Length: 278
Image (cartoon, rainbow, N blue to C red; front, top):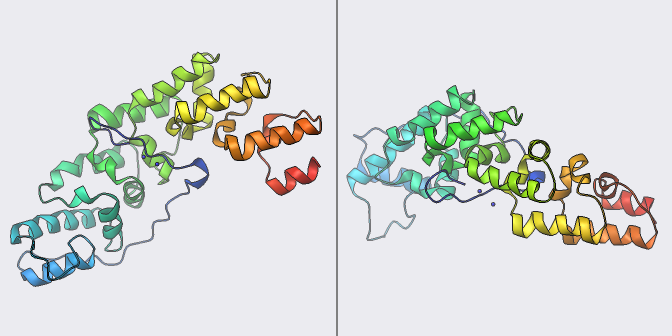
């Protein structure tokens, strides 16, 4: 699940329950290859990092110029705090980062944005990029800064903490946020109430309206005969599976003629829930 602020954004949020902080360890001393290093050593080095085809007999061996350009990007990333162990992760999740046409100047504004605007440390910046490498290809002025301003306006803090959620929130267009707010308003919440719901459950910005939010609202109102007002008290309702958690627990309570809040119905684990409401 993720969104690059380019002309064709795609959302790539992770589930809120899996968006744990990226634990960034101090990198080992960086290995910097100089351009005078032999072609064979450069090729071996990039193969070991998984950037170049690992088949040594490939007939499409890259040129000297291509290797040097890729090494320029690698050395730049290392100057920003990334280690040799980080490079293969970036290469796997974002191959275009090591394109022979990319220049350090193309991605430098994003690092400046993370440091200056987001107030992320070197380690935090690396963590955010590792969580969402596509952020390096986002336009700072037209995407990242407006997004940061919106997130702060609704009360979100500590966006410098390198979690999957924070990284992908920062890399989401404001228009995507607005569609979720408008949907909540369309089902009966005011603008202020909708903003508060989103602020309490930021992962909602990554949920599909048609595949997640709308079916759950319909089941809340029509299936459970509950008020939309309950979403203001427990917006986390959207984070639970309709098929695996919401419906089974509701049916279980109906059979026992028990009426409890959404929070009590959904928040505890299965063992505790079914033991309490036998």
